[in-house]
Amino acid sequence: MTVITKKPENPIAHLTDADVEAIGAELDAIRQRVLDSRGASDAAYIRKVVKVQRGLELGSRAVLLGSAFPPAWVLGTVGLSVAKILENMEIGHNVMHGQWDWMRDPKIHSTTWEWDNASTAEGWKHSHNQVHHTYTNIVGKDNDLGYGIMRVDEDQRWHPMYLGQPLWNFLNACFFEYGIAAYDLELGKNLRVPKEKRSEEFRTGVRKTLRKIRGQATKDYVVHPLLSLPTGSFLPTLAANFTANLVRNVWSHSVIMCGHFPEGVETFERKAIPADETRGQWYVRQMLGSANISGSKAMHLMTGNLSHQIEHHLFPDLPSNRYAEVAPQVKDLFERYGLRYHEAPLPQQVASAWHKVVRLSLPNGWLEETTVKNAPQQLAKLWKMTTGGPKVRRAIEARARQEARRAAQAEPVRAA
Image (cartoon, rainbow, N blue to C red):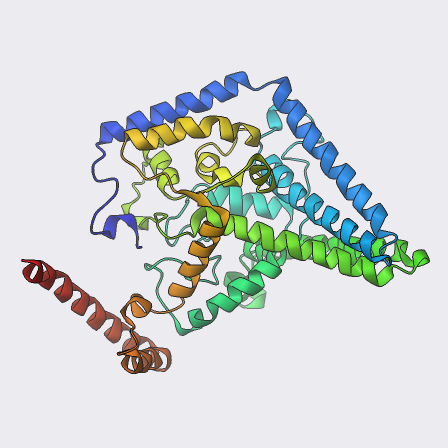
């Protein structure tokens, strides 16, 4: 995969400008129908989810007061894990998108919600709602393409540090909430700036994030374990909270990787995006730059309906419980205009995303070109690219591209 404009066969080349605007008009109409029909049943839905989540968390924490008893530990830990996933995915993510602001309920509103996560709501809304959803899958503009620590597209230049990205990705999954907090702060970029030249905005963000992390850690690793002390359950409760956070982190990381990382999801060249990108063009970019997870209602609920990632990216402000309703209409649109609706079960999408992480930890084409027979030469080439510096890497990459072009030109001759 590479950016859509560099592909041998551009999957949207058959669309005329009129087609693109017609797609935009149809999607606008779908969105408007949902906006016009929002009402009491939608409000009842989110209030019920919030009530169930809070009841589940409270009940689980109560059970964990006696978590020295193993069955109580298992029951409380499973319940707390599910409660944390619900809070982050179906409630926190969607409330902070403003999906329920129309209810004018100050308790379930994007301006007041603060979630059970190391990221501050303020920082997350900027990096996710404003940056990622605006510049979805544009290489060099959307930092969600690898979160600044991984290479997940051929158009991102390879450096030796990417050899370790399968390990970075595993660690990021385990401690995902902290990785996202650092990502929201653009920590890597800002730490390269001399300390005295760092912006006040960054310093303020750091202070708020550290305050948030301290509050989260105090709640999960001090207050609740101390409450369990009278029953001798301090350490079991501490372990239960750590386990629940770990489960939530790995789950949310997996779901989010499935949204844009699987093989076949399109990316876009920065210079190919017109400054006056139309609504239709923006819609088409969201359609091809996202991927869905197929599954049951329970699966959709536990993913925060991000299993409907395509619909979410088209309509990020619509209530999440309505994505399943509009998905068939969106899928029909894809089919009528000859576009690929990228959807697969969770294990398949996760495996595909991890395959890309591993494949692109190596230089472009290296894994595909390596066989048992040429493995020694390939390893020697990789060693040169790892130790030889930028000039050596560029020279080897240029030679590889030249050889690939020659092979492509020779293919029709051999076929004939």
